[in-house]
Image 1 (tube, one colour):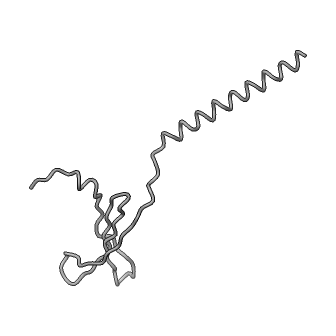
Image 2 (cartoon, helix red, strand yellow; image 1 turned 90 degrees about the vertical axis):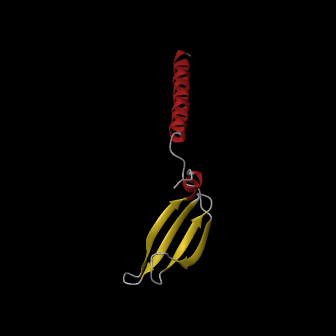
Image 3 (cartoon, helix red, strand yellow; image 1 turned 60 degrees about the vertical axis):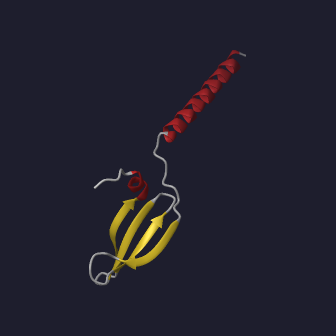
Length: 97
């Protein structure tokens, strides 16, 4: 009888410890920065104001409020990033000269 009681106490202690570990792991995971939201993109082609006849692609992510401008580089056969803007930061900026 005493042996059975000792086993039950040990099992309860192990189960209680596992509950504490699971709660601690969930709390540590909650402190992690949130993942980036899946974007909804719109792409528009247009002229770039850099002189010449350069054309670019403007890609807007409306969920994360970001804008990226790309240009095709013929010599390397790849897209080059020209500019990145955080639209929410631009909208909250105080107007000035």
